[in-house]
Image (tube, rainbow, N blue to C red; front, side, top):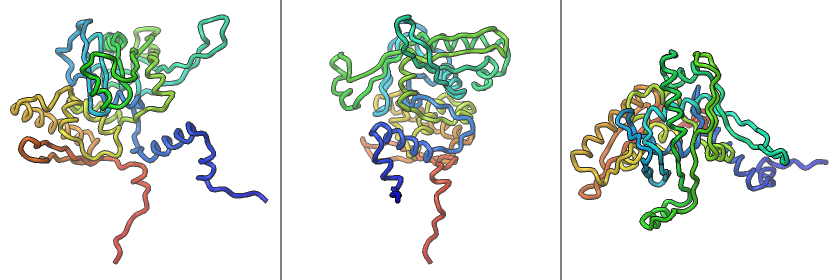
Length: 327
């Protein structure tokens, strides 16, 4: 006669890495918001300020180098040129069209090993539609140039504890573990008509993030409807943090490449006004149902907090049993 074991007993028998993967899957299901066409990407790319919230006035100097910090989520160093909203748009369009795992043989006749990599296979027409651009041949050159600029930039992602990074930030030495790589690799296209196929491969760092499932799902429809560049910098962070319902003005400043503590009073007032416009834009596009900004503390400790309500409930909230107050 067999023994009926509970699911929890069976899960307990799994190796630690498989248990962790199962828990991530459960959290992923619980955190879904019914998105129609999400952009699935490495979570650090959704929570970084490495893309300036503007299209014009970007530094194209090949010696450009800047460290982007969003405390305590991401520490990224960018080298090669400054990236802006158009580069984030192009990257998010690729992830919206989904990356696929491909395996190729090692380039060695004496080895039978296989090398996995990730690639998006699409067309110029689909890419332009994904970015919200008009599917017209005149836009192909601009899009290709944007991809090539992304490919030319080196990203250095710092791992480990943020406190460890801060303690060593002034030494000039490497701060904890990290990884340096280009986000995009080979870009191939078989023609310049709208329906010509396009293949864009990702760098090793992106491959590692997909292999370890260190990913975030972003509502791409909402993102590409946003008009405010500040909103485009903030929305991915908000949408990739399902358990958050407020964000401090200091973190918002980090996300748009500003340091709130170093701003003058006039600059802070102007910044908060631009942030309010960004939140209003997120409501207009159906990402947020509502938001409010309120002051916290007083005197030198005075700050501001933006609270918000997501327009789409989490899957776990949508399927939760209805609660009734006792009579």
